Structure formats: C-alpha cells, structure tokens
Amino acid sequence: MSSSYTLTLVFAGFLTLNLLLKLWLANRQLSHISQHRASVPVAFKEVIELSAHQKAADYTSAKLRLGHWRLAIDASMLLVWTLLGGLGALDTWLVQVSSTGMLQQLLLVMGFMLISSLVNLPLSYYQTFKIDQHFGFNKMSLGLWVSDLVKSSALGLVLGLPLVAAILWLMQSGGNQWWLLAWTLLVGYQLFVMWLAPNYIMPLFNKFQPLEDSLLQKRVDALMQRTGFKSDGFFVMDGSRRSAHANAYFTGLGKQKRVVFFDTLLKQLSPSEMEAVLAHELGHAKLNHIPKSLLRSFAISLLGMAALGWLSTQMWFYTGLGVQPHSASSNDALALLLFMLVVPLVTFITTPLSAIKSRQYEFEADAFACAHASGQDLRQALLKLYQGNASTLTPDPLYVAFYHSHPPAAQRLGRLTAQ
Picture 1 (cartoon, helix red, strand yellow):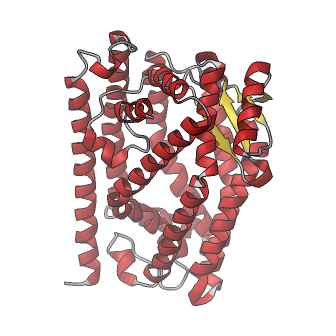
Picture 2 (cartoon, rainbow, N blue to C red):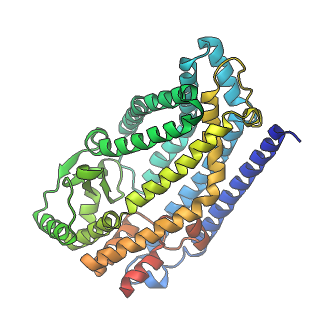
Picture 3 (cartoon, rainbow, N blue to C red):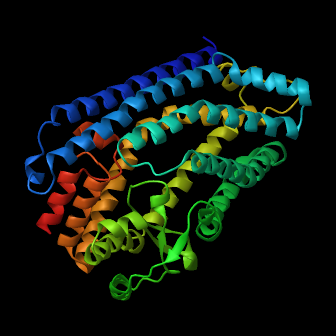
C-alpha cells in the first residue's frame, strides 16, 4: 500500500470519527438540556425563574441545532477542498490566469479564504438575525453587520497578507530550517497584534470611554492597590450596540493592559458585584494564566511548524489529500493550506486537555477573587450573568468535560458558596 493511499484512508477515518464524535456530543447536550427543561435545578430554584431557565435551554438548543448545519458544511467543504479536488482545481486555474510565482500563491491563499468565508456567511447571518434576534440578544442592524464584515476583511488583508507572504518567502528561501524562522515570525506577529489591538484595532469596531462611575472607580482603584496591579486604565465598551450579552476582560500587553467593561455589564451588576468580577479578571492576570496559555500555544505551534516543514517535502502529503503538486514551481501555498485543513482533525482529540486547564484557571481566578473581594458578590454576579446571557444551568457533564472552558454553574457556584 502506497504512502499516498494510506494517508487518504487515515484522513477519511479521522474526518469520519471527528464528525461522528462532534454529532454525538452535541446530541447528548441537546438531550440532557431537554430532559431538564421542565424544572429549575434545586440549587437555583430560589434565584432563577422557570421562564429564564427555559429560555436558556431553548437558546442553547437553537445554537446546537445550527451547529449541526455547521458541522455538515465544514465536513463537506473539507472533502471538497481535498479528496474531491477543489484546492487543486483552484490552484490549476490560478496558474493558468496568473502563471506561477509569489503572486499566484498569494492569490491561492486569498481565494481559499474568500470562498471559505462566503460559505460560512449564511450561518453567521442566521446566528445573528434569527437566533440571537429571536431571543432578544441581537442589537445589530444589517448595516452594522455588513460594516463589521468589511472592516474585519480589510484588517485580514492588511495584517494577514504580509504575514502569509513572509511565511511563503521563508518556505522558498529560508533553507531546511525555514520552519523555525517562520515560527519565530509567528510568535512576534501574535505579540505585536496583542500590543496593537487595544489602541488601534478594537476602536475600529467599538467606542471605549473612561469609566465615569465614581463609586465604582473608587472600588476599582482600591482593589488594584490591594492586589498591586497596574493598567493603562478602565474603560467602558459600547457592547450594547451589537448585543445584550455582558462581559468584562483584560486586553493588551505590558503598559498597554486595559480593563474593559461592557456597558451591558454595568447595567446588570451593582458596584460591589462589579468589583468581584474585576477581582476574578485580575486573578487571571496575577496568576499568569495568559502568559502560561501563550507559552503552551507557542510550543504547540512550534511542533506544528516543524511538522509542516517535513510534510511539505513529501509528495504523498499532496497526492494523498487529493492535490497534484507542481513539478516545475513552488507548492508552498498548497502545503500551507493543506496543513491548515488537516491539523484541526488531529488536534481535536486534545480539546478536553485544554478545556481542563482552562476550567482550572477559572477556579483559581475565583479563589483569588474571594481572597481580595467578596465571594458572595461574585456568586451573585455570576448568577445574574448566567441569567442575562441565557447560559444553560443543566449542561451534559461529558459535553462540559470535552468542550467547556468554564466550569458549569452548579459546580462553580458550589465552590464559591463553600469558600
């Protein structure tokens, strides 16, 4: 059996198992939520109304059903791009209309991204203007949705195209160790974007105003002093312009770190509850969760680039995935795109490991918040957020173990009660 044929069989097997596992987990989640829809869990009966509980169940179920379509489309497109010859056909056509060279390779990457985006566009529209609209979360107009789409696409070209061109150039001119140089470039690029985002990228989509609530400002300043944390400031983001969902987060690197509150969050929580939520976010920063996550990401990407460096030289890697490489020109863009298509099938099995670590970080940040603010206020804030964001209180345990970056409500609030 040839290496090419073996890869085809392995790829088809991984694709099938991946799809079946995702469908099985999604159906478990749907079934579990449906079975518990009729009554509020005992631990929440006194604080969550039945109507809110059922809204969360219905909202989660609607997103899961849309997810079924997304799984089917993603699997179909993966087959079209690979074994059914879509990527090879696009590549051949571009060679005919633009000859070979860097321009053709960049056009191949751009064409791939454009087609993939257009295929997924209807699902994005349906999520926003059907599901979120129906459940009262969408605040976007069609014009704003289109504007966001245009801005994000333009940003992708401005920031992403030079990176792709640099990687392709390194693949062609960087020698046998090109992948190590490309990895270094990727790390620097990611850090640069993290530094750039707060002041230059995010303001393209939202308005950020300094926090004006004097009572909350005093609480926040005192909390920052107690924890020895410094930031570039506290800002309120006009999240209500797009969604009724509420959140708070840190962004940026070094002196560019900012604390950002959604305006929807300020409307839902009291100052003491806001302080507790901020203490949780501070916990992530003080416990170095972000650097640790970045280091793991960098290590994984290093392994990935090393694998790409080897696979790009193997003829069976192309032919086994339905692509006939060129004999007289570079196949670097083909290798890069094929690798991007295949890797998620392999790395999906590691999803529970990253989810476990993320849930551990959430518990650690909660403990930090309890040590520097009120655990009871954090508990009340989380209850309001679960209800306000229509987060289900009855997820399937196996679905949680596999996917969820945050602990389920009962488990998380139970720990807070005990602290």
